[in-house]
Length: 112
Image (cartoon, rainbow, N blue to C red):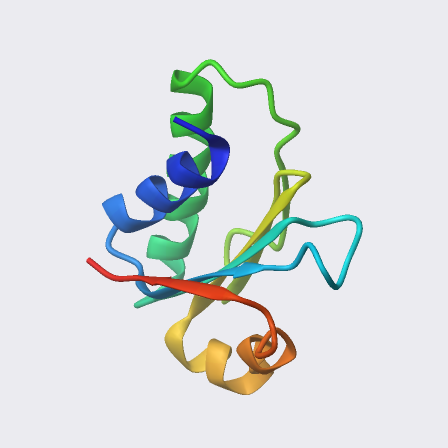
């Protein structure tokens, strides 16, 4: 299983909503995929970030895992190098509207 599949599975496993994976290869040389997902609360945000880390480790992949945001943040950013994941508590996603930034990129949508 490739990294993107592992990450998507880890996100959906913890019941994230409105999961979108944007193919950013044509707009940035640093990131291949930008994933944006909504959660119900801060606790779910943290659980998903931890699940991503755990699933990558279980798969035996060597990925540099960096996370931005504190345990009480409504927006967590998980940087995996070629993949960046944005986890938003629902209302926060509406405030920042990151999806608009990537509107011109090819997108795959996932839901539980």
